[in-house]
Length: 69
Image (cartoon, rainbow, N blue to C red; front, side):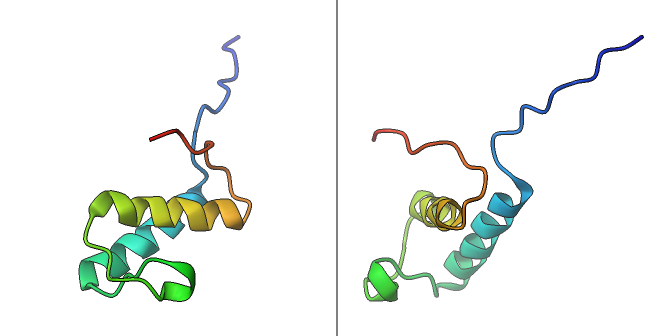
């Protein structure tokens, strides 16, 4: 009898949607950083992904812990 595989997914599907939403805004040139979007326009792809992951963490979705830079 085959064993049941345990899911090793690091990110939840909801977290992927949050990152996808932020990337869409980034590509349109509308993504802003800082508290309340008061900062400048995001110009780096990595920063856009980090913002999406941060939003997912705030909502309590399954996302790995932040790693040191």
